[in-house]
Length: 164
Image (cartoon, rainbow, N blue to C red; front, top):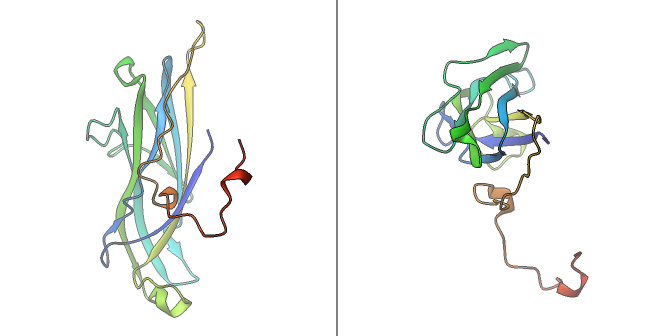
């Protein structure tokens, strides 16, 4: 799976919430999910401290299935989750929460946001039991990605030039 990267700001000072959910489809035959979540706890460039972690909701039932789990190695938190059949054919939702504080506001660096901004990367690996053939089919899901929200096309847009 491709990693997704995010650089989000906090909603208020000290409370970190992205509200930029990402989704991974859990195909039939999935037995395990391995997640590597990387973020800087201390950033010397802007004197920023952050303690953030992923919320992983298998099956979108509202539970953080990764709460309290994981082993930290350097800047990376490694989480391994068993995936049950009840989660097959469903989306797994990722979000990030925690706390962050910076001695320098981001406006000093030219950002429009005063709050700390914490970059992070999430890598997801799904292990599948391939002892039997598996057919994976799903609908593309674009909700929850604020950077993909459609906007009104520019006046220079030519639909005839669209790649098919």
